[in-house]
Length: 157
Image (cartoon, rainbow, N blue to C red):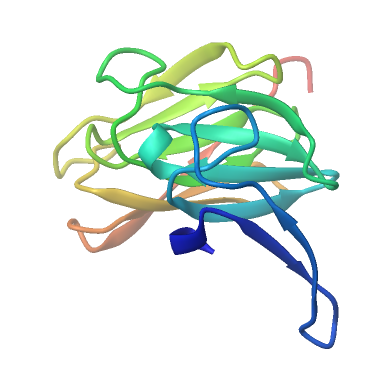
């Protein structure tokens, strides 16, 4: 619930069984959460106005966060889509800079790709991301009116 700064867990009948978080900037608190992805036992939450992504366990317990306000490596201004590959790397679409940033399970920035533009690998306001079971990374490239697909290859596989 973006305006209440919470995550609501519902049962199959639509009854609220748990509320996670409140407005704030501490661990487990949110400031306009805009996307949630369940990944195995983890909840990946785009905490938009705290300029980060928080990783929680299924009970809502804070595990770690990545990102901070800024336009440098590992920083965010408009975090959007999120996903995880088979190696556990966390991918975050940074809408304003046109980047996809990739972090390890400890929250360290591994690399980023993309830039503002209209060529292959460039983005104009990327807003979504999905990673399939084959580790293909689908990035919604809004203003270029396309979805770009990239392939992650794990070393040693």
